[in-house]
Image 1 (cartoon, helix red, strand yellow):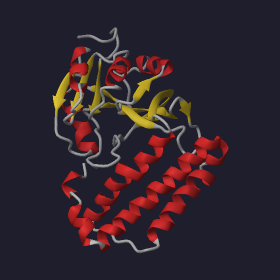
Image 2 (spheres, one colour; image 1 turned 180 degrees about the horizontal axis):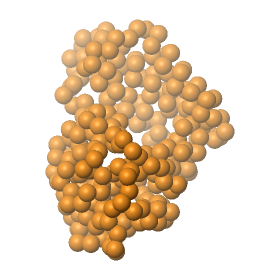
Image 3 (cartoon, one colour; image 1 turned 60 degrees about the vertical axis):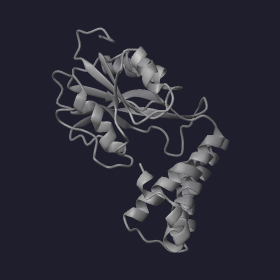
Length: 269
């Protein structure tokens, strides 16, 4: 089914999901503005993410979660078209991004990928400091020439000849300040601690404080979080909390066999 008019080179839109019923329709509608094929790679949603995706014409591939990079490479490998546009379920194309993507000469370009700036939000508030903007992310790429790295955490497209587009996507990262802190203090730091433990990384009693303080100072001072008011302070504190807990949890795994035995290290991803 053609989702976009097409004298231009066709594009496949890909999203990975897990319980994204609240986001998936808006994300696919956004992708459908420039994509002729939509693929959702779902890792076992218990809500109606898959049904909603199919209802708007997307092909759903059910794949237990492999980690960030391997999971994001599943959809492109199954794509009909050479060019792939990858978005997260909480990301949306702006009008300027749609126009910029539609204007690209994909049949003749020497570039193997294109990056868009990302506007990161807390609620409806766009945070422009703390390193959150411009947050260039490679989102459109030629699957015959490049792909996501196989890294299972924070993977990115490994392009050799990328270009930056002067256009934005919107990323609704956190619903509110509470979510900013609960995610940092919960699954983000726990997952990172498990990964470091499995890799054999060793830390000492000073590590949590040092890494937590460094993360806060980097965000608040060097990346000018102090210029973004309460949100800038909150993002900086959240980064510090995340870094502190990541190393504190790793230290706990090293020191406390009871805690370690109760943790399921097979559920990192």
